[in-house]
Amino acid sequence: MKSNLLPIAKEGWNYIGYSLLATVIFTTLDLGILAFFALVLAIFFIFVFRNPERELPRFEVNSVICPVDGTVLAIDEIDDAEYAYKVTIDNSYLDVSLLRAPVSGTVYSMYKENGTRLNLDSSLSEKLNENATIVFEDSNSNRLKVSHMLKQSFSGIEIDSIKSQSMLQTSRYGVMVNGMTTIYLPQNFRLNIAVANELKASQSLIGYFS
Image (cartoon, rainbow, N blue to C red; front, side):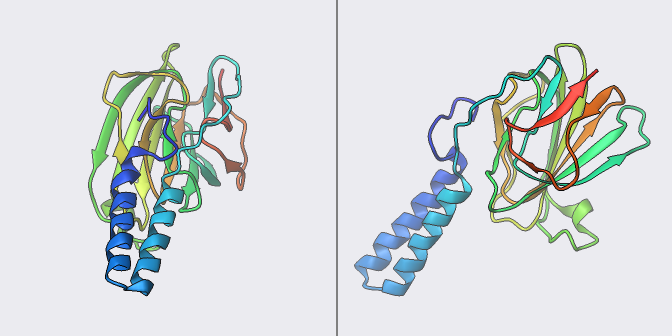
């Protein structure tokens, strides 16, 4: 993922390929309506798994960028021994699905749990839905935790990183189609965002470690 410079994320190739194959088969069988829907589905997958190259802003040292495209739903103070704030970001089918490293440093820990893809209105979604949690540590030993949880989605969370792996800020580390991301930040963090802000992975500044 980190070195994939193609316009489509590799996780989407099978979806697009099978849709295009179905288009050819239905066209050959003179099943025009099915061929049309298969082609529309292929275009949908191309859109969902698009992999845009973006200009990378030069932020100050100790900066944290957004790891995912989406809208800020909530910013809360929490009572936790390690983290003081959490930022909740909603990612939809209209947003780019690629995930990008929020800091330069290492993957301190990584955990992924397979599960269901229930609508978040369900009281069971938080316990049962597929999720992944990654803790990043920068060169100054500052840590932040990023948790991804699927909503209703046709594709699972794909994480292309391992524990202790070194990563540069903005590096691609996975894909999540239609999910919720929660970023946990320590007390020594200065936020630079507000509720309802539209954020872009690798381009939007979350804030700074002080």
